[in-house]
Structure formats: structure tokens, C-alpha cells
Image (cartoon, rainbow, N blue to C red; front, side, top):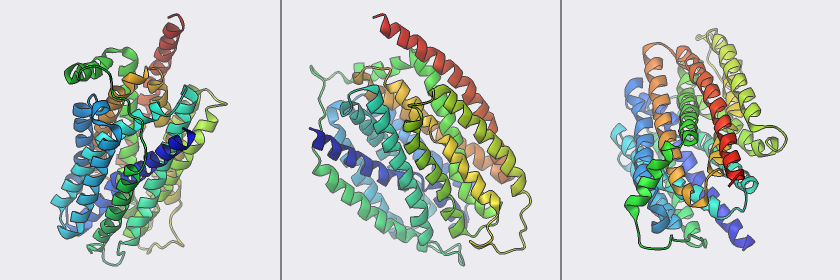
Length: 415
């Protein structure tokens, strides 16, 4: 039994790893389509929407039905579709194909994330174990993001930014996807199908009814704001490095891996910290430090000497300091997800995860588009200054989230 659980965890981690590289390559691809296809910043920002809106739509439509379809089957379909899309990227180069790729990746991830989160509930026995597994999986997701920046950077030509050589990375990503398909095929999954006749309409309505709970509504607002901040910064960080900090394209992408590394280490360490500190105060300290970093680093970015050619030997300090925001951003998302899911019965995890994915996707698209529009019409510093507003807003939402979780726990204790 323990061995089977370990194999399932490995399969979940590897599945998430593949999607981590592709989902978070949108910032790199935005930079490259601007250079390779001469696309404007406002137009390039829609790639986030092609990724996130299908995630929201698919999650909304299928979350309630996945327990009957099968979690492993859903992950197999999603991973196979993504592998085929990767094969087409270098064969049919163009901005349109980039949109198609992210549409397929987003649609597949809508099924995969709901299946993965629901499976975690089946292989863990209590809240502490659930939170631990969630943090490990989310931490490894960020390790995939980190790997992706260096993988893409290895195929980029700093001397010829308009080169299409970066598309060759998709041959490797297709191979990784199909290896993961094989891993899923040989991994035994426990996916108990609900008893009785299929009632998909009732299951779908049950997911919608969750939004009537005040706790769920405040959680949704918190998750939306968090992802708005993360994607607004993470998606546009390579372009910020390139245009504001004057870094070459390959270094602009590779140094963004610091952001992913900080998110990864922050999430892997968050589980240990939360054993000793109250989650509410820990997350508030993180939010305050995030705001301070933005207010400190943005003025530094205004003092760049554009006449100097930047190499790894003379990279400005701002390029190293800004990505550190990921370390303090890291604990927020898995913490609030775990608190929310562990407050519900296991049979509600699938529909709740559907809501998490939907509103996270909407938050990501909103953050990326707002940042892209402000970046294009004003400048990168102004665009990043704007992130202080949702940071303040999420502090307010977390205050109410804590109060409502306390009420929910009190109600459960009396039943």
C-alpha cells in the first residue's frame, strides 16, 4: 500500500513537472514572439489568456465529471495532447501556433490539475499529511518552472533575437511528455467511482453551490488576487529584464529562474515553517516583505546605464533582488488551498478544485493582461509598481478568510 502511494506521488510529481515547464514558459514565449514575429506587447499578452481561459473553462465544465471518467485517464489524455502540440511548434512556426499550443496546454491542465488535487485527497489520511504532500508537489512544480527557464535559454540566440532556433526546445518537451504518458500507464491508481447512477447535472450544480458558502467565496477572492500578482510579475519578468534592465534575451530568461527557485524553495520549506508559526501571521509577513521589495527595487531599475553591454559579470543588482520576491510569495497559494480543501469532505475536493483552477486561471489572465497593457503604454517600472495594490487587497481578504475558517472549525466541532 505504501509502495503504491509512493509510485502515485511520483507520477503526480512528474505530470506536474511537465506542465510546469510549459505553463510557465508563457513569459519566455511572450519575449520571443515580440522579437521573432514582431508582435506588440499588448498583442503578446493574450498568450496568457489562451493558456488560462481554457483552464478555467475546462475545469468549469468537467470538474464534476472527472471522478467517473477517471483521474489517471484524464491525466493521460491531457499529457498526450500536450506532447502532440509540442511536436507541431517547430513544424508550424508562427504566433498563431503559439496561441494553439497554449490553448491545448491550458485545456489539458484544466483536467490534470483537478485530477491531481483530487488524487492527493485519496492518498493522504489527515490534514497535516495533505498539506505536506501539497507543498511537496507544488514545490516540485516550481522546480519544473526553474528547469524550463534554463532549458529555453539554452536554445536562444542572444546575438540574433529574431532567430527561430528557440523552437527546437519543443522536440525535447514532446519527448518528456510521452515519457510521462508511459509512467502514468504503469502506475496503479485508486480512483473510487461514486456509487449509484451517474448524475452529472447534480454534480455540476453541487460545484456551483459551493460558491454560496462565505468561506469559499472569500477563498476564491484570495486565490484570484494571489495568482494575479504571481502571473503579473512572473510572466513579464523576462521582458522587464530585457527592456528595463538591459539584459540580453538569453540572460533575461535564465536569470528569471531565480524567481522560480525562490518559489520552489519557499514552498518546499513552507510546510516546515507552518508547524511552528500560525499560517495567518506568516502569510501577512510574506505580503509585507513583497511590497517592500517592489518599492525598494523599482527605483534601482531606473538607474541602469543602457550604454554598457551587460554580461553575467556586470548584471545590475536589481536583476537579482526582484526575483527574490518569489521566496515570500511561495507559501501563500499552497497554504490557502490546503486550508480550504481540508475544511471540506473528500467528496467535495473535486468540485472545489474545479473552482480553485477556474478562479486561479482568471486571476492569471487578468494579472498578465493588466501588466502587459501598463508595460506597453507606460513602462515596466510602473507596471510592477501596480502589484502593490493587489498585495494590499489580499491582506484584507486573508483577514476574513481566517475568521471564516475559525467559524467553520467551530461548527464542525459541535456536530
